[in-house]
Every structure is written in structure tokens, then in C-alpha cells.
Image (cartoon, rainbow, N blue to C red):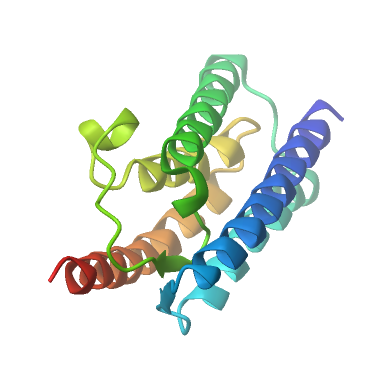
Amino acid sequence: MAYALLIGLVVLERLAELVVARRNLAWARSKGGVEYGRRHYPWIVAAHVALLVAAPAEVWLLDRPFVPVLGWPMLAVVVLAQGLRWWCIGTLGRRWNTRVVVVPGMPLVDRGPYRWLRHPNYVAVVAEGIALPLVHSAWLTALVFTAVNAVLLTIRVRVEDSALALCRS
């Protein structure tokens, strides 16, 4: 029951992200923003939805136990990942999006977590993708999502870096 509540809270967080992203997308388009990587975006959405369905399904169907020595630290990682994600959202402000949208002429952000990392939001995504299933020992979901996410993030980072390089030139 507590794990279902955690998954539900993460789903609500994702819905909040989509509201922010939709608002920011409208703003970016009004400023001439250009979207890149449309082809891979549905796959990212599908992977994240699958994570939120597969983790509780694995726990229920395979009777995965809550193992405190694993579960509590993984819950801490999930909470920290959410904090990092919202720090990224706050730092990028209107420029943050779930899509790759670049407003020409805007300088790169080099404050907040971007002071130290080029793609800190993806650090949060990776950490959460591993930790959220492991809160309740759903190791199979953690493994599969991590592998799929590695492929998708490789594509995503290349698209994002290329888009940003085009706008800087």
C-alpha cells in the first residue's frame, strides 16, 4: 500500500511536470523556439510510463518484499532525485521542457546545477529509474528500465547537444 502511494505521488509529480512543460513550450514557441528530436520523444514517454506501471506490477505479481536495508536508502535517492529535478526546472525557468526546445539567441544556463553538470536533469532521471523500483525490490524493472533509458538518453543527449550547438553558432 505504501509503495502504491509512492508511485502515485511520482505520477502526480510527472503530471505537474507536464503542466509546466506545456506552459513553457507555448512560451518558447512564441519566442521562436525550435523543437528537435521529435522522433525519440514518444519512446521516452513510453519508457517512463512503463517504469511507473512495471515497478508496482513486478512488486505485486512477483511478490517482491520490502527490504529495509535496500528500500530506505533507495527512497532517499528517489527524494533527492526529485529535488535535483525541480532544482533543474527552477534554474532553467521558462526554458525547461520535457522536449528539446531551443530559443535562438538565448545563452546557455551556467548556474544552479548546470554550474557543475552539463545535463543534471538526466542524472535525476537515471537515479530515479534505478531507485524507484528498488524501493520495493523490483530489481527486474530497475534493470530493464536502466538499459532502455541508457539507449534513449544517449540519443537524447546527442540531439540536445547538437541543437544547442546550432543555436550558439
